Amino acid sequence: MEDHLPVRALVLMLSLAETLFLPAKADDAWKEFSSVPGNFAIRFPVPPKTTVRSGHVAYILVNQVVYKIEWRDMPRPKSGKSEDLDALLADFKTGFLEGIGKCATVLDSPASPPFHDSIGWHYICHADNNDGIDITRSTTVFLGKSHCYVLEVLWATQNGEPPGSARFVKSFRLLDPTK
Image (cartoon, rainbow, N blue to C red; front, side, top):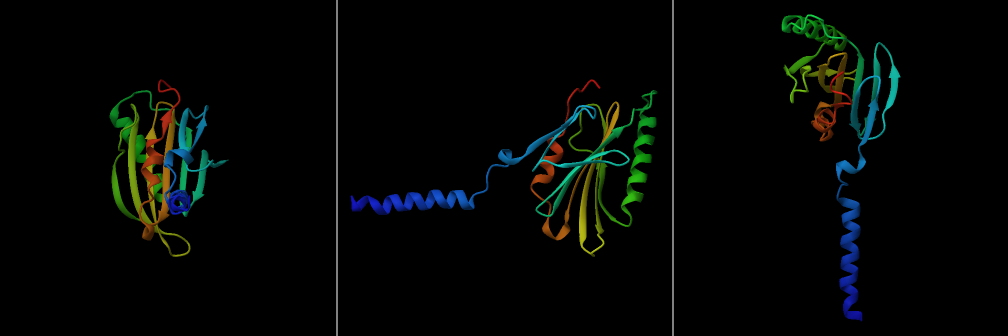
């Protein structure tokens, strides 16, 4: 019986090491947040806080990373012409960039992946915060049929893009794609 003791101890140590040192699957921890009036659902690492400013906002700070979605009613122009939609997106983008302040653009492109039949835009910039820390701000904007959605992930540039950044954006979905 003493011969099996080292094997049992090794199995116990390996099980303990796996529990302590291997991260849990990301799917296990993320929580869905949804808004019926906003017609969407998205997954956060932990349940977000919510507030209402000029639009509705859900956000959370986890491990020095901010995950945030802002949504508001914003019907598309009735004309449906692409130039009208492009002008609406350009106006929104200009106002958004003015709100950030001085920043260096890293990426300015259509949203990827495209989302349903919405117009999308993806913007990444670097800007110093009030403490002089360089912050990367990854912003994806979707103009849907009746809402505008702004998804953002912010992190200290020196830390590199967090693994949950793409997952956050890809988890976004409309509750009813016809609206």
